[in-house]
Length: 150
Image 1 (cartoon, rainbow, N blue to C red):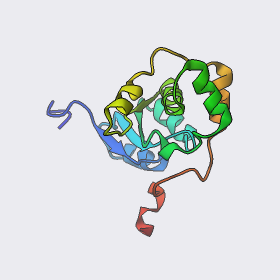
Image 2 (tube, helix red, strand yellow; image 1 turned 135 degrees about the horizontal axis):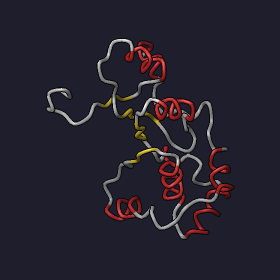
Image 3 (spheres, rainbow, N blue to C red; image 1 turned 180 degrees about the horizontal axis):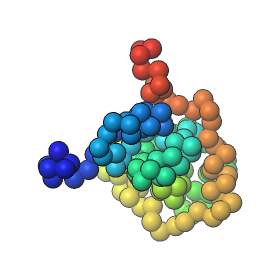
Image 4 (spheres, rainbow, N blue to C red; image 1 turned 30 degrees about the vertical axis):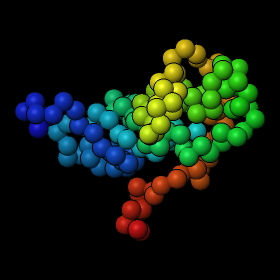
């Protein structure tokens, strides 16, 4: 369909590196985007870097991570410094990390907050601090390598 100009891009969801490598052995065209779980407490840096090396954009699924870590005093301090919410800082961090974010919300005020991310930038020190929020066990959904277990 892509070659016939019926679709403009090809995307996948929840593909880990091993899935993308397997796909590359048979696909004529690799996906342009991979939507994966990605938030402050589950950043998937290695997978993001692999996707970047393959020119595959990363889109965060559940970029706010159910608010995990939003009560951390250091995150609150960064938010207060920029007169933002912890959620806005978390989203800005992902954007600065090259991740596309589309946070879910049905409330207009939250949607407006989610768009107000482009009038500040995090410092290297703040980014390093937010990197430390990453946890190996921070996944909120099922591991794509073990879907047959469910």
